[in-house]
Length: 492
Image (cartoon, rainbow, N blue to C red):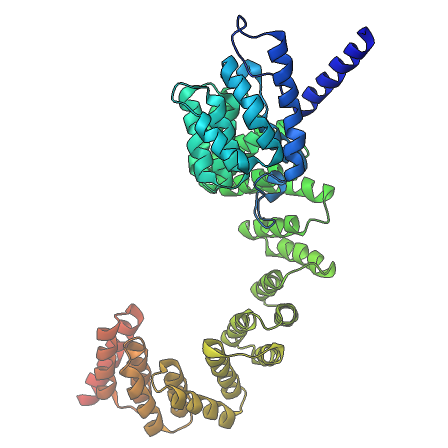
């Protein structure tokens, strides 16, 4: 008889340890050995049964910054274990409440936690045990009803302020609901109550980082790393905290360590490149992005950044290669991926490179709406600048016909006519642009500059005064003063 009893005790103890549960506390004078064992049997059986319903506890979307931490199987196992008890830090239950929990609540929780909601709601009493409030909150939490989860966790804490797991789960529910600011206090309270571990410190660091409290975030992440020194998410959070504090050398040192351990993590290479940019070390940033490019892991956005970095070094051909690759990788989904750098190339006088990039944009996919208008204007500017005046003018005139209020096209056409000895056409375009509030100042200025070239200084002065009235500018004021002096000498 003794041997079966020992085997039973061992199996019961193993089950309880496996789910980290103990008996809910009741007064020793009213709690019998039979009650203890029955409650322990129910508690030990519960988590394994609920685990069959789902192995994920209110999962985070895979692309969320906290997904790696939250969806971790061990973290989920602990959350599922929340349905059990920790007698040394739990509110007491009367024998009647214990029987109700064991006989009414546990069987339904084992079948489907959601089905336990009506039973738990009816069991909650103002002077009753906070265990029922807590359990109901946990059911809502697992069901991703975070509003009710927070409500009942707070209700449990109002009955039993030192309810450690309620405090912890309240913090977790607020984090899961994206209410990071509100989560800081219960996270801190959880730590003060002795329930702080790497995950709690890590979530506290994330909450502070989300609120741009970089010093507090760094402190929390450093504590988190004490518990879990190999946790990449915590180190990444610490790097971001260092960056927020402008401690770039510390960030680079930690990133270098992380890259050596995880060279396959492209986000680390990109983050380090961004820190190099912050430190005004573009050549080092180029190396990082080129490594990603050679590994064929660079995204379209990162290739665009690489092109921009080459432009800062006046390496136009290298920049063009990166831009072309970015447009190809984007597949025409984002026309501005090529139009923005093409505009930069045009502004720098790199017309040959700009033409290739614009051709790539057209080949990548259909371009419509504002993107098409921008593309046509850039093609017109390139054509005009490279001697293909007929094509350039035709493009601009087509744009004006499509939209007579396109001030930019009017000004570009006016500039072309002014440069090529067609003052009447230029004046017509400048005059049309001057009637548009956004373009009036520039239209008057360009018209005035043409009049100066024609030595019609009095007319130029009047146009410059109108330009200043539309948009006062210091450089135009100085130009006006000089033209007024010339006009006065001519009159005298």
